[in-house]
Image 1: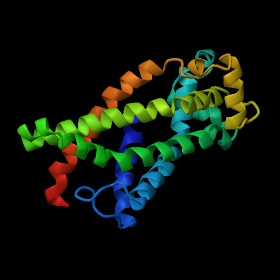
Image 2 (image 1 turned 120 degrees about the horizontal axis):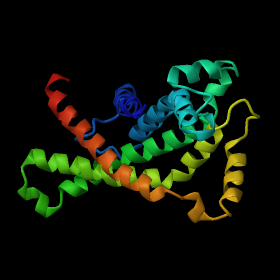
Image 3 (image 1 turned 180 degrees about the horizontal axis):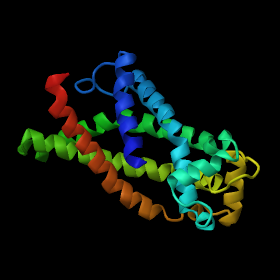
Length: 221
């Protein structure tokens, strides 16, 4: 699920840059309206994977362990409730993905250039500079953005951990979660430290591997 999602995120961003005729980044800065639009659209398309997230949440929810056996079985059982059931929580996913992609891709290259521009970095080989720049930029942005949007993930999980009941808006679920967690911001961010640590490592690896592949394939473009 995560591999497919990230592949779409990066791949569609590149495709939308071409379609919108954005200045190539690099060497041009990605901090522009055109690049923001490309990132936003990639997030919208990525949100179409909502059914996969929906099934994943159900399989991870304890009360459904006896009801849903595996991914295929869950997809088949959800069909009994109508196709809308696959897209429960879609509105929250759409907001989360489109906004987080916009922030990530517009700030990624400028942040990387700041990191590579540090005097100490100039002593390193060019390839190592690029690798470190990609890793650190991906780590910092990924961890920060995932932390900022963490409450949306909480709301999304609460929406998707239900089957065959009345549909509720994201705002309604937020109010319920807010009450459930004693109207506490700390309660709303319960478990965020684990999410931050995971994102710090995962996004650094993902972004640096993307950079390596882009540089390796550049001669063939």
